Amino acid sequence: MDNGAQTYPQPHEGIRGTDREDDLLSLEETAVPRRLMMGGMAKCLRDAVLVGNQAPVVKRMWERMKAPQPGDLVIETSTFYRRDEDDRIKAMGILVAHRIEWWETDEEWAAQVEQERAAHEDFLRGPYSQPGDGPFDPSTCERCTDHAWYVQYGPKAADICRWVNCDFIMIPADSSAFRVEVGTRDGNAITFTRDDVVSGLADAGFTLRQP
Image (cartoon, rainbow, N blue to C red; front, side):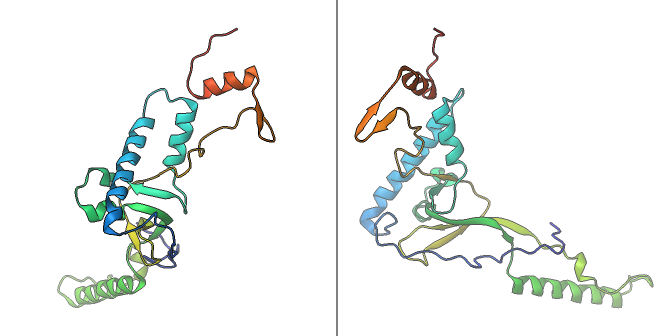
């Protein structure tokens, strides 16, 4: 991919995790079964919302799940089918960032350009060069990018895993994340009208008869 003068971050550049005091991302041996169970439940939820003729609430859930944002609890979906426990553990955590970035570091890129320069100069000194062959032009080198995902899978700020060629979904951490509020609240009391009930049923996917 030729990015011209476009600039991107290097791999891992500016990525920082957060030390956590809760045990959501615990890596203790006793926490592993819980983590794997959460991964299994996430797969079941993903499969449950991928249905035809989605009810509005289901569509809303899927649209949010397939568009994770930094700070979300996430899981990488290909690991649903992997047996490697380490992969499955590192696949779930808090999304720190996902972005387009350079495929290699600046140092690696500079070394690659220098290698191409040396190869071009060797060519010019060889028997196949032509009088019109010009000097090496660094702008002809094409620097590639990746879409990288950074996930904090453990409780320490350094517990960061970088993923590429992958697909993440958000795991709902709040049962009310996709709920649409209905009714009128007055203190601890809630008043429902007929329209509230009808709209709630429609949101859940019920087909309603016309009055």
